[in-house]
Image 1 (cartoon, rainbow over the protein chains, first blue to last red):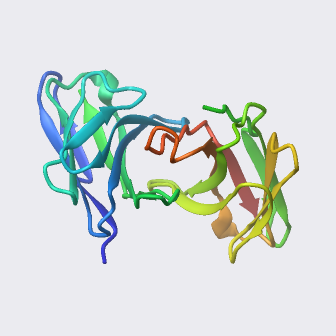
Image 2 (image 1 turned 90 degrees about the vertical axis):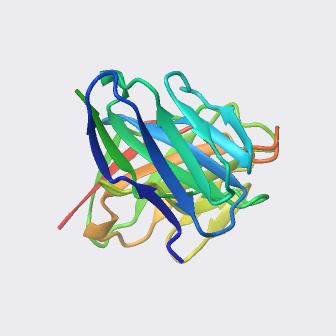
Length: 112
Length: 113
């Protein structure tokens, strides 16, 4: 039982490039989330999903897209990366009717 | 969603009890109070959650007064490994069918030898 895993762990992009971050969970959780964390700050919600095939916007969705084609996977896409998207990205999941969110180890993204 | 206020940083020494207080004046009836811990280069980890009075688990205790406008996370006999950022969050999963947690800047706890 690996919990929540994220791929890749670290990535460097040039402005304008695109990439996809993958989050996978093996706990059969219904809810999944993508957060970003900037230095010295708390986490901010980008997008979330309440089930397979459904997604919704969080606090800071601009510049990101998501997809949840399979229950265990939640993908975060950057179509045209900008330096302002340099951050650490965390994925989380939780079970329906339970409050606790389980977080992945994070993906560190640097956009030059 | 209720906003939370907690100290930016705290210092303690090994073996001491640490109490971190969080203010949430606008807490709603359905809101739970949850605390997460985050070590450098790791994702946050759930510590404890409560609705009212006192909750205790193997890691910490959570004290919530009757008016629920504040809460106190208590860490007994801290060690160096408790050095981390602690987040207080207030929210309810079931309002609107999702769990929208608002993370503030948290409290940076430094435990010294």
